Amino acid sequence: MTCAHVVNVALKKVAGVESVEVSLNKGLAIVKLKPGNTVSVPQLWVLIHDKGYTPKTTTVSVRGELVSERGRLQVRISGTKDTMPLIADPKNPGAFTGAVNKTGKVVIIQGVMVPGKDLRAPVPLQISQLS
Image (cartoon, rainbow, N blue to C red):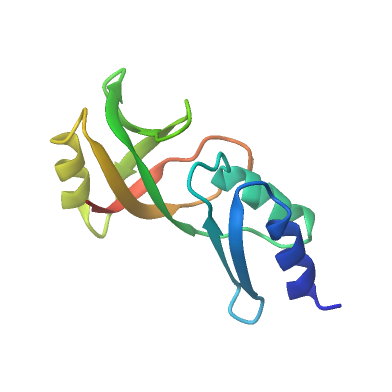
């Protein structure tokens, strides 16, 4: 049994996961989630860590309503009560500005999340693209 297989099987067991592709040579796991899932990126990071690997920068696509709480832009993730803080992507700060102007609207956000030392701690989503 290969290490990639172990990670693949573990990720597929997570409720809400539709499909998984793992390439340890590339250091990459592509996880597609089912609509209506309640899986969080930190949950996946912890699982990967528990299998002996270090989670890295994660590219995500999130659908939800843009909200401002305590003066900070967040996305209320559709189908859940969860909110995720949003920050500008240094490579595309205009996407964050565009998001501020759409507060109260449901959008799809593409961006990246970078794990900290505490894999369970909330991590902001850097907005790369907004639609």
